[in-house]
Length: 471
View 1 (cartoon, helix red, strand yellow):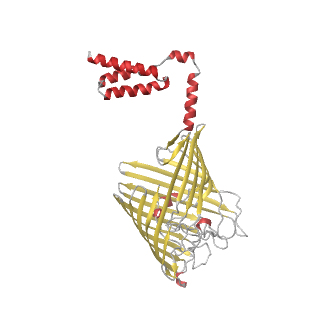
View 2 (spheres, one colour):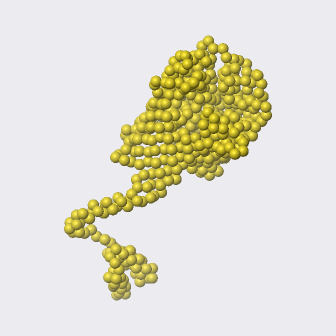
View 3 (cartoon, helix red, strand yellow):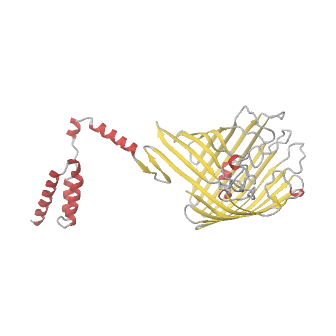
């Protein structure tokens, strides 16, 4: 009898409240009242559950039949509300705004770098050599191989197509002279100077999962891209280049194991993944050589890449091969020629251990940068090749890594040039500590050697300590 009395009291209270409350507020207010009655002990849990079940809304098909426009109106209102809604992205830093995803990413690094160059003498002159020479040691607070990064991605789906735009801005911390290489020109460590912003990425993508993706704009190349993206010196300094007047980037292992892939205007197609395989092919802005002046080339450059990724228990692997070809129409009487090259590489992991091997070869391709020193003064092609190997071992937050690499340049047929570069090589030893998920601390030692076609050679030693942050 007591339980029945409580139920009657609760139902009466709810009924009175419903009569005194506007219809759109009844559900929320009734729920709150029932919960309060349960908390005060007037209703048991079973009684509370029973009353909540009784007040649950039921479908009313008659209302739908008498007002057929109600459902379209509700859907339209919901769609309008969805367009106005701003949500956090499920991962990364960004937001979803009415069907458009906006994401931000970035990186900052800084290193104290001490470089001990070889003495600048006649016997240490190597044209194209990357070991530093000078009269004394130098110290710098500088960027490593990466400058800073700020990336902005905007993506959506329209008409069944995945569409995205990417902007990549690369600000450095070092002051520069804004010379021929723009934001990454030679350093100018003087008062009132400023650093540069390298806008090296501006591209759009259009694709579907089963059709692949078309990229149009400026982005990293295909040939040689995996070589630098898997290099341990990407996170650090490696061979510094100029340290007394540092630019926004060091060399890392560029020109000492691989040719720099560069960021280039391109139209590139990438297939969907077939198992672990994926292929890319593209047409590229033709580049001039540094032998003469600006070339006018009638055909674009071509690049392609094939990758294969696999995983088996504790084993992981990433294999790749790429190629490049570009015809140069000549300049000021120099002959036309086609510069071409290929590379192959693989990175294998087993638990905490990772090893990598890489090789490239080319004819009329040059060294350090694409088509740099690719011909002699008469326009005759030089061959080039190179490789690097590296290994790393991770213990909890600590990673110990080492690598060795070299790049070779051959004389053109009939060329005599004893001071021209024959080989750049380096040893790198590195220790990394993952302080947080964003911040990594690093210490590194690099020994660089440059050898000429004749007897000349130069050696330098570099120590770097600093940190890199990614978000």
